[in-house]
Image 1 (tube, rainbow, N blue to C red):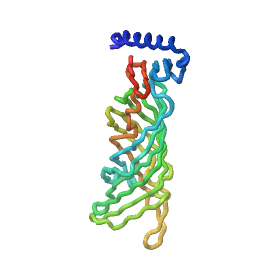
Image 2: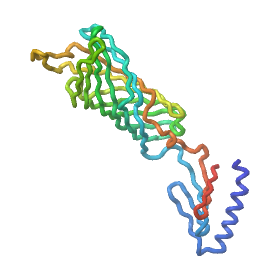
Image 3: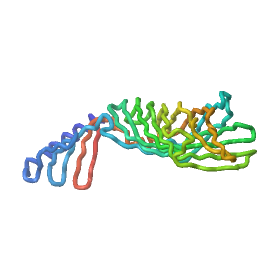
Length: 278
């Protein structure tokens, strides 16, 4: 296709060259703007030659979030395994990433994310507990793969979360008997580090696994029972979380896409514009 266009391009250049020779007062010299080279033939017609970047330039933002989360927990009390139920949640998981690509195959990212993480346990057959925290997280990771078109790439890294709201529900024989939430609660650690890894596929499907090696509960937390006696409910409790999410915030992948043909020619006449890639 590019060879068929060359005669047309040469003819246009010759015609424009004649127009330039006939009326020098209405023409401008060649101008350069970034990677573009512009030849202005008259006040109403111009030809622009340019080159597309090999990868996304500068820092760019992608939006989205973790989407639906399916959480699991490894939980023990006094060294004895505690039965727990996988926890599924859709809300409230949102975030944005700030990306920097160093080539079409390698980049890094950071960002900010709000996540709803927690666990559901059954210490006894009659008792069920739902415990969760909202966290504000800052990830730092890298990406390897096809970053230009987003057809496939792998990403991994670490994240530090700030737990800002704790909520607990207690059920006895299937009936909810207690519910409360606390801002910046001492029941969990304030800072919760984690590791993550995942893959991103075209046209927008993602899979990420995130693991929290730290105990979900604060063993030093103290409270009072009904008789006003002080006790530490999580002293002998260990719980590590892992969750899987089926989408991650590299959404809007069209902004990644780089033209497969490296060069272009734009012809402008007034408001009309034609672009040819080669």
